Length: 230
Image (cartoon, rainbow, N blue to C red; front, side):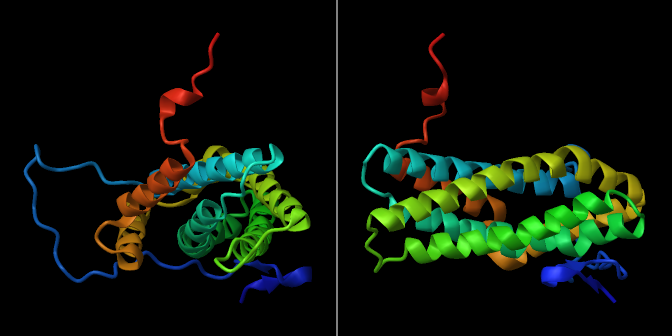
């Protein structure tokens, strides 16, 4: 049974979910020249962190425009927050909470960090809810509402930048160390299957395309524009 701490934080100390495949078809056998290296769980999760980083850039651009007295890009922010809710919170963090964190807890590895990450997942969902509410289609933002939106966007950025950095450099390497090699590869397949089940055949690429369209509406899609003049 999971343990529940103050504030309703659930610690995944029970038996972790087993890596069972959702598909029933047998993969076609590929020749050595056709075969692709499997995507490992950390690689999959870190690619998803790339989506998170790009939405954080959308949030930063929104803050910049509001602080400079420009028009609030509510549609772009709402679309970005929708990706955070559907792809990051309901999918990516679900994978971490179901498959990654329980294995670290059972191995008594980085338990304090895992507790902090779980709490931040909960706080992030609160902030995302506020951002979605503030930028809904029928909302007109007055001065106070714009200030509150900036506060919530900034809080989300400030929390998730160190959050994902800790996961990429500490949690995921430790996860690899505590999971047997065969199970580790099986989990990579489970992650891929779950992504296709939730987001269709376009999967990760479709989500990336959605983020790219948001970036275009804000004029932050050209990587070269971020190169400093030195």
